[in-house]
Length: 168
Image 1: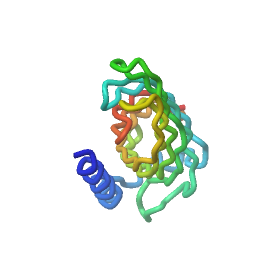
Image 2: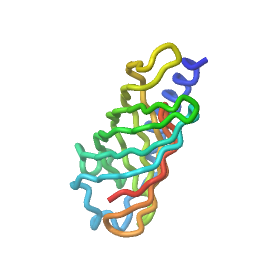
Image 3: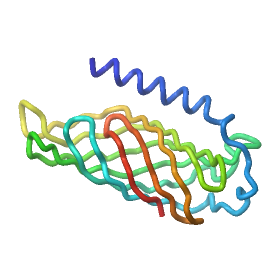
Image 4: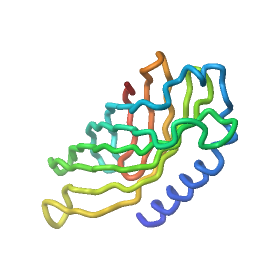
């Protein structure tokens, strides 16, 4: 069952990457936006498996303006980690994440960020204390930009869950 969910999320992520570009259009504020700087975010996690935690990301721009002509967008490599606590197992786990993130700026205040990548898993397992494996990573987020450098972040990801935080 888990493999079907993983495939569905990967297909959804691919569709978002392919279909997201027409949604974003160049805005008047596009020239004022700083596409070249590294973005950082701190967030709280509510995981899929009775777990919660916190994480951080650094989004490093690789195509800072116009990955698609006429669209206010940028392409970044997003690296970070999530630290989770499992309530039922009383154990700590860590998810290092590397993802390709495509940011679409819809208006002065809103942007969308679909992403695909890889997550490592270092965490508890039923049969032994630690289990390590590599998992596909897919996510879709939205940011509400309340200043030139800061935004509220809401991101839904697989396999880590819901993330709520702030970008600076």
